[in-house]
Image 1 (cartoon, rainbow, N blue to C red):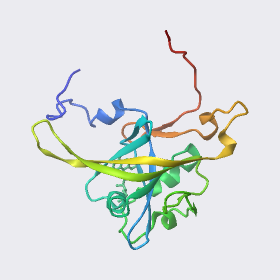
Image 2 (cartoon, helix red, strand yellow):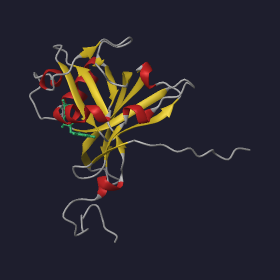
Image 3 (cartoon, rainbow, N blue to C red):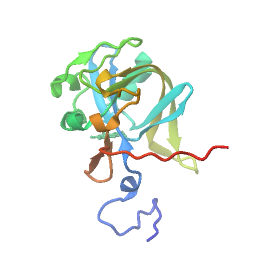
Image 4 (cartoon, rainbow, N blue to C red):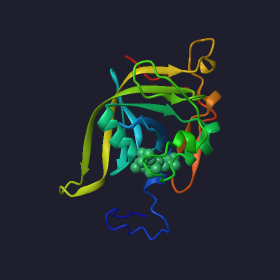
Length: 201
Ligand SMILES: Cc1cc2nc3c(=O)[nH]c(=O)nc-3n(C[C@H](O)[C@H](O)[C@H](O)COP(=O)(O)O)c2cc1C
């Protein structure tokens, strides 16, 4: 089949786009409001775009607390989602009022970060402490506004729980099973890995 995403003429019961961009890693974003309310929410329109320096970004529909907090306080933490946190991650996506902390909602503790004032989630396998860089308003090729903004941040400090580092100094992702979003209501986790050595000159 072939279809036009603007017309959505796929004749399927659900839009297949996100199922085709899968697995998508999940950024579990902690941020703080100017009134010191701790916020936490998952974002799967998420990735890293370079590693020197490390820059990450996520796409958010307009009006999200995370975006407002990050733009106002200029910092955030990207907690790396693991399989054992899957229900709590989903719980923190509830559309609650800005003065409700999802940490309390999902009964989660937090741990201070080293370089930013926003804490990370306690028990998380890894976390990126980020300084806000910029927001890119996403527009279509014919300059129509979309509902989404892309929020970019530079990673200034990285936490890794030592139990996931092997004797040979590698991060063993199969031990914490990174959680990812597929399409529809589906999720997946990384349970096995394989190696391919790149051809080099
Ligand atoms: C696994 C998962 C991934 C999500 N990814 C996104 C996303 O990429 N962009 C978005 O705008 N909302 C996404 N959502 C919905 C937000 O998490 C939800 O709207 C949340 O309430 C936003 O919280 P905030 O207003 O505190 O930032 C996702 C929800 C889940 C469960």
